[in-house]
Amino acid sequence: MKKIFSAEQIKRIDEQTIQTQGISSDRLMERAAYAFVGALDLTLLAYKPITIIAGTGNNGGDALAISRILLDKGILNKLVFCQVSPQLSIDCALNLSRLMQYGDANIQTIIENQKLPDFEGIVIDGLFGSGLNRPITGYWSTLVDKINQQAKRIISIDIPSGFFTDQITRSTHIHGAEVITFDSPKLSFLLPESQYAIQSFKVINIGLDQEAKDDIESKNFYVSRESISSMVSKRKKFTHKGSYGKVCIVGGTDTMIGGVTLAGRAALASGCGYVFYEVPMNKWDAVLNQHPEGIVKRKTWIYSATAINSMQANDDYIYGIGPAMGSSEKTEKAVLKFIKEYKSPVVLDADALNMISHVGLGFADISPMSILTPHQKEFERLIGPTQDSFDQLAKLRQAAMVHQLYICLKGPHTILACPDGQCYFNSTSNPGMAVAGSGDVLTGMICSFLAQRKDPKLAALLGIYLHGYAGNLAAITKGEYGMTANDIIHHIPHAISQHIC
Image (cartoon, rainbow, N blue to C red):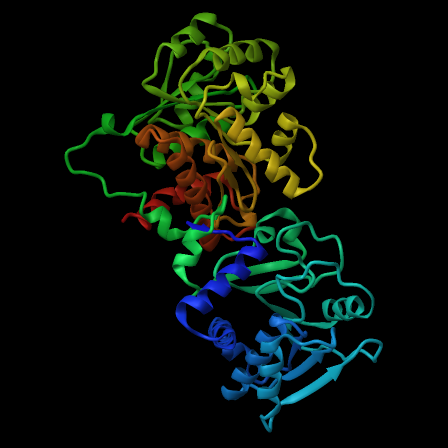
C-alpha cells in the first residue's frame, strides 16, 4: 500500500531525502523533472504548440527544468515565467538561469497587470504547487481562467495550480488536468471535489528516501496492485468446495430478485465453495433459474421468526444481507432482530443499511468486525449530513473506530475505513460501473473473500480492488456505456487470475 502524505509531510520527506542521499535540492528537482518528462508520450507532443507555465516557487523550478529537458529532446516549447512574487525559490532561480543559456529557449516573463498571453495547444502547468496555502486571486486568477478556456490539453506538474492538497478548494484552479504527480497521490485527488480539477492522474517514482517515508505515519493509504497480488494465493491441489467457505445472501422481495442473484453469482465467481439464498418463498424458482449453482434454503425467512432463529444458529455461513430486500415492516422487524442478536461479522448493504438508519438502530447494535458497504446517500442517512468530503472522511473514520466496523464508502475511489482508524482508497474502477447491480456484485465478492479468508480487512480490500479491476476489464471489452453488473461478474475470475502471486 502506498501511504498518502500531507503537503507538510511531503516537504519533510524531500528534506530527509536530500540529507540521507547526500544530494542537493536542485538535483532532486532535476530527478523529478526527468521522471515527469519520462512519463509523457513525447510522440504526441512533437510538432504541437506547447506552452509551459512556471511560477516563482519550486513547482515553477520543476517547470523550468522540464522546459530545458524537452529542448534537449528536440521538442520546442514556449516558457511563460509568471513573476508571482519578487522572490524566487533558490532552485527556481537556478533553473531559470540554466534555461536562459539555451539559444532556442523562448521565454516570456509576465508581471501583474500585463496583457495576458494566449494559450493554444498544450499547456504544461507549473504555476503553483502543493505548498500553496491561500486561494489564487486577482490577475493570477484571471490567468488561470484563461488557461482553462483556451488550452486544448493541460498537463499539471504534481498538482493542478490552485488546487489544495489537504483541504477543499473553493477558489480558482486549473480544470480538467492530466496530472503527473510525484511518489503518491494527494488526498484531495481521491475525493469527489477533484472531478473538475483532475481528468486523470499518474503517480511516478522520483526516488524519495524509503526510510523517510516509513518513518512518517499516515492514516491514509492508496491500494496498489502489488499489495493486492500479495493477498491472492494459488489454490492448493487437495482442496474441495468445503475448503472455500459458504456464503448466504439474504434479500429479495415479491417484485425484486435480481440484486440477490447478482450478489450470489459474484460470490461464487470470486471463489467461495457454496452460495445459499434466503429469499421469499415465491422467488425460489426465479433464483434457481438465474443461478442454478445456488442453493435455496426452503423457508420463508421474510415472514418467519423461526427462519431468523435458524440463521442465528449457523455460523458456518457468511451472511450478506440487504440486496433487493425492500423495506416492508415485516422484513424490517425480522432483519433488525437478526442484526441485533447475531454475534459474528456480517456484510450489510443497501436496504439493510436503510432499515438501520430508518429506525435509528445505530452502529453500536451491529456485530463488531462486520463490513458495511454504503454509497454516499446511504452513508449520509446513517450519520447525517456533512459539510464536504474532508468532513465526511473524518466522520467515516470515527464511525469505523468507535464501533469497530469496516465501512466501504462506495465511489470512484471507494474508501475502506477500518477499526484502527486507517483508510484505504481504491485505485480501480471506471464510470461505466455506475449502474444498477454493481453494488450487489461488490457485496457478493466481499462475502466470498470473507468466507475464504475469515479476515474482514483482507476481504474488504480484495473486494473493492478486484471489483473495480473486473469493471475495468469489462470496460475494455464492452466500453463504459452500456456496461452491466453481469459484465463485471463475467470478468471476476480473470481479474483474480491476474493477481495470483
